Image (spheres, rainbow, N blue to C red):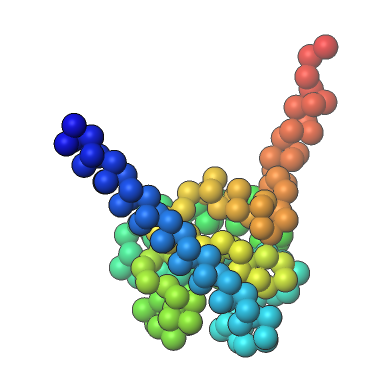
Length: 160
């Protein structure tokens, strides 16, 4: 019986930790959106209004950034062409920018909608599929052009 109680206590602790993490992430995004609405410069001089973006914080010595995150982002950049901008920031060179965005570790990615509002944050490695889903959800990007062409071609070729 004692092991069951310990198990439920462990589950409660993990649950509170996850809830705390999600609450902090939402508060951070809300603060960034408020700062952006009041026209405080968020340090994104390269951002073009009207095109959603992935803001990607990395460092030169980050192995997961080079081996996993960068290829995932490049895959999305190739799929969405000019409908997506990627803003890569070296957090070790731009400590001020990393601090203003609340970056505590790398890789950290933000999904920014076409109006310049941060909509999602990913602390740690985020797969291309996860980023693609967030872009659909928050940035209004539909299927990548190649995928849309593939689906249209399959519909034309389907056997009767």
